[in-house]
Amino acid sequence: MTVFTASGRVWQRNWLVYRRLWHRSLAFGFLQPVLFLTAMGIGIGALLTPVSLEAFGGVPYIDWLGPGLLAAMAMQTATFESTYPIMNKIMWGRNYEAMLSTPVGIRSIVYGELAWTAFRIGSLAAIFLVVLTLFGIVRTPLAILAVPFAVLIGTSFAACLIAFTATQKNDVGFSAIFRFVINPLFLFSGTFFPLTNLPEPLRAVAWVTPLFHGVELIRGSILDQLDPVTALIHLAYLLVMLGIGVFFAERTLARRMAG
Amino acid sequence: MTTLTQPVSGPGPLTAAWALIWRSRRLVERNIMVYRHQWIIILSGVFEPIFYLVGIGLGLGAIIQEVPLPNGQVVAYAAFVAPALVATAAMNGAVFETIFNVFFKLNYAKTYDGVLATPMGITEIALGELLWALMRAALYAVAMFVIMLFMGLVLSPLGILMIPASLLVAAAFAAAGLAGTSYLRTVNDFDVPMGLIVMPMFLFSGTFFPVESVLPDWLVTVIQLTPLYHGINLIRGLSTGIIGIGQVWDLLYLVVFFAVCLWIAMRQMERKLIK
Image (cartoon, rainbow over all chains, first blue to last red; front, top):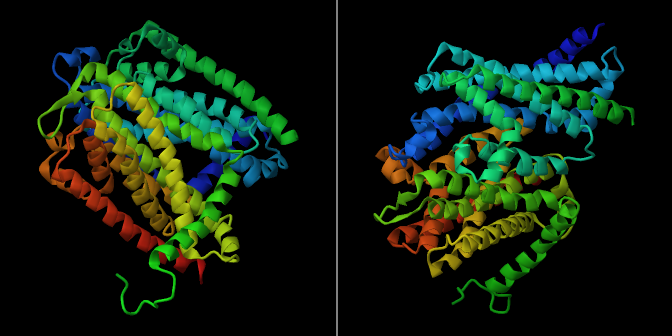
């Protein structure tokens, strides 16, 4: 069995579990953007004057916010799916131990889990894009690119988080990751307000964080503001992150499962 | 005044209630022991409302600047959002503790089956978990209050009452969480209370924008039936010093909501634990 067929088996295992829950997962995948866009987009949008809207490049606030939320959703879902569920398969349910006694190896587990994340984020991003279209936010057919961009954000975060999870002995570290990494990224990556409103040093920090690049890519594709050169920089950043994540995920998981 | 059916020589209801709370402290002690090596989980919760305050309150506030209150007075956006975040922090602290942790103790760890083998009963368990959730929420409320003081966002001396008010909010949600968690069957059911109740309330209870002036009337009426709206209205009234008959209703609502939820919680836990 090659690495890829084996990865397919890992993917398939997740699919068999998910098959019983998919309708609920997709329903929440639809509901969440609707609620967020209504509350934050329309609610906060109503507090903004035409002058203050210039901060958002002249587009209505809800149009500016929507794509940012899509990018943030990709990060949050991928992160969550790569912490508790992976921990479960490592030590609570010990599924990986069972898998490793078959021709499935560490590399196939990592690839299979990432393929699974790609599938999950891809389907959620597609639903999100439908919601954005219903809200009249989508400006161009190019917006379809938001789905692969979301998948890239999701898998990049998932790879890094799998690498981290494999080093943890219990789930205590997860709440620190959520509170001190994911939540600040959610709030300070240009999701809710433009980075130009941050003090200079914080803006520089935001530039080197991953979600910012994801937000820029997705917002650019949906609002038809994509500049090819900067888009390539954002893409390169996320691809490098994915590569580094996979590199470490294979190593930490191999060490964990051996020990 | 005691009633005629009350035995004259027996302990008074206050003494009995105190004895009950005193016995419940054992469960609080147990939770403290368990969290000794996991304090980061509780402490990190302090930072969540602070990040929101800086991100939304200041970041977005730099653009929005001012918000009108229902009485027409205008406040800075950060001063509008901050008291609401005190209320949501109280809700989150209480709900996470009573939904997730109690669910695991109830269904997986079977902690309470062990507790019931001691002189402690259902009432002590419910009260113990409630007290513990209150302690956690109190930490979040006090931390936010201090941050607000330093940032100059407490606009009235009444603001000090935000702390007891947020404890009432926390008690209401802790009781609701205890009542709700007994209806959950698997971990996948968490989506329902979190996604259909907690998250929509967080977004639509006037946390980030004044619902009265933005949303249609029918929706405002629906929102006014939910607890977080009243928690936020009460706490914002205290921090801005703009209070009226509305805050009396908030107070009344939260007390009644707490009592009803606690009653349901006790009944449900009894059903679940004593088969």
